[in-house]
Image (cartoon, rainbow, N blue to C red; front, side, top):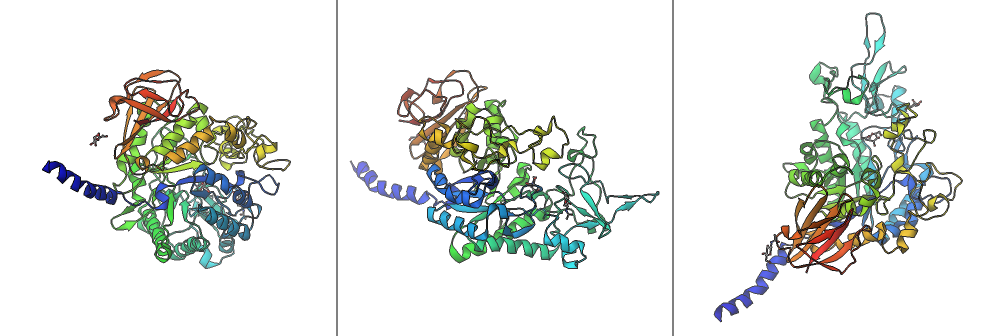
Length: 579
Ligand SMILES: *[C@@H]1O[C@H](CO)[C@@H](O)[C@H](O)[C@H]1NC(C)=O
Ligand SMILES: *[C@@H]1O[C@H](CO)[C@@H](O)[C@H](O)[C@H]1NC(C)=O
Ligand SMILES: CC(=O)N[C@H]1CO[C@H](CO)[C@@H](O)[C@@H]1O
């Protein structure tokens, strides 16, 4: 009797302790980031090119999906040799996308809906048509020092060659000669993208001022592009000249290929991490003023060890979200369930214990989920992205399972495709297929534009694969996505623990649990059916209730199954809850 009384007295104390342990999460830790590629989202003025007003008019669509933040690919003034990743004026909006007033209206509408706007920051280079580069060519010393110049090498016959063997990411020498200057400038990407000299303090300050300019306008953070290429080695350590890079020795024997060299002097330099920490200080300056956390996402296709350095080091903070690209780089539709598990575990294993993972399955640089995996896997991948522990990132169109569009050689505009000079195999390098217009409805140009033509062709099949059709179809990728976005707000997904297993070659499953609430997510990556014993997971016993099922699944929400023998059909994906 006495014991019982004591327990009753202790109960409220345990309850208070449990609540206190629930760490209060910040906006960016729970939200879904939706990537918009502005050129292809919605054209509001009929010129065949998406624009800012098109985004503003459709922010409600994001809200209805359950999305709290969107990052926009570049909207800045650009000659568009690389569709906005070559920036001519970091302080201005590209005319075809709209005006600064349009941008202010976008921010106002986003604030109204409580959607955060994150912009793309492209610090690795500027455009060769930027005022800075033009001034540099005219001999303006301040701007000359914004770039990286080097003398050519003259051979015994008096012919001039590039300063060293460095090659551009897009093939061929990374050096381009300029008559006006009598020197070569460095471009790690296309010729039209001269690299900025981050060893020049003026450049460092200028870039921070750009960040401040947009933060002052109300953006909630930046996604930083191609960060790994920010710095080159300090040439003063090598007698004042940039040294040759060693051969990669990987069997690639074409000296014009990027893969020919091991990029020890042009990639992942220590100074890069320091610069990220400096930008974070600027972000925190703003948080200090108004309490709102500004978020930094960094894009680097690097090893997990290097990727983790972007989070911070010692007492210096860095990016909150160094992108986790495993679902893009490490696996595809041919991967086994074990390979999927191995890939998903990677970031979770390497990340610092007090940091969050993030999940990205698609973006404007990689083929779409429906094409890299298969259309049947769209719901399964969305379950992984939205229900794994950490932050979810969705590339526009993945919520409806858009497929790569067919873009003929004649219609190809991406420099990565055009630079192949190969009308047969260009498509393997082109990024146009994942950039085709967003599919709103079955009308002309999939409802993207009322114009006669669009900048890229609309993908085939849009008559049935679009937002409007999927909204009114009970079982659609879109409606599954909405349910998952809702489900992810449950404490088991926000704060819960995680365990995963490959049941066989094809079936991957994971458990999320918290305070007695237990969910199991099962994804079958192939067409065969299996009977799975989910009681493999501790405490997963008795009856399971179907919470969300993919469109390949015959299971209805509310239907129950015996945990020890659940029939999982081909390509089926389901979220169960233990009753
Ligand atoms: C910029 O570079 C592109 C090649 O990417 C070239 O076609 C263009 O003429 C260059 N512009 C200037 C002003 O040098
Ligand atoms: C299993 O359930 C027990 C009793 O509710 C709980 O104490 C334990 O933490 C659970 N373990 C797991 C792995 O779910
Ligand atoms: C990896 C990568 O290509 N990064 C960006 C920086 O530079 C090139 C050229 O702008 C762009 O293609 C990128 O998006």
